[in-house]
Amino acid sequence: MKKFTPRVPVEQAIATSPCIGNCCLDDEDICLGCQRHINEITGWHSADATERRAILNRCEKRFALRSGQKYQF
Picture 1 (tube, rainbow, N blue to C red):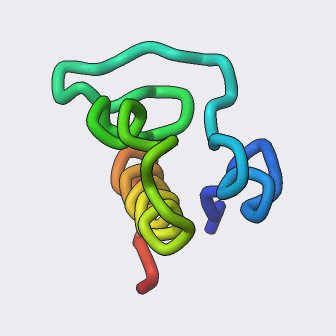
Picture 2: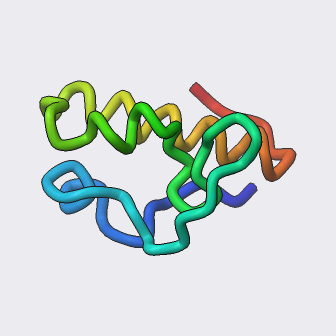
């Protein structure tokens, strides 16, 4: 089972951004590159570390759902 891993280390993604420069929103306003919703993208810089981790967890779940993989909580 392939696990979602940001192209940058998690700690670095929390400090900066999980953006991988492949920005393209789907019909639900989810970026196909980093798997963040547009609201998560625009709110990233004002989010604290706890919320950023929550965003990354949601990204992992979205990746698993899109790739047909079973998500493990």
